Length: 177
Image (cartoon, rainbow, N blue to C red):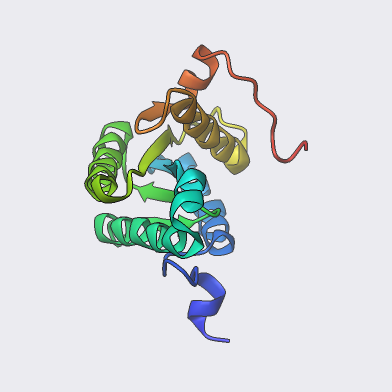
């Protein structure tokens, strides 16, 4: 089997979820050495309605196009991956929250441009490394909470994990399910 089949998503060419998790678990330990890092989750807003209106092939093309945006905007030191049907994650190494907001907004603006044709936008959740997080899974959970807060706010926005709590949303960990 080729490297591409092992570590790359077939549709987008980005890293796949397995490879992303592997790299993230390794990189997480660097946070204890004061290497700043930020985890960013993106999810395509309205993809199900889009598929209903345009079909599965159009959905796949839209996801592929979003993947191309991530590939163009990320740096060589970052890891961009497709981690769900229409969900993406980017691990930004040596990147603080301010830099992550700039990165996420560049992606969101590029998606808005593409969305003029498709009507699709992106919800974005950000979390930076913090020693108080409960390991790498705690950082992942915080990133997903931030993403859910962005979706709860109507999408096409960027949110942090604290926004999840402030919105009064209820968390059910996928590990506990």
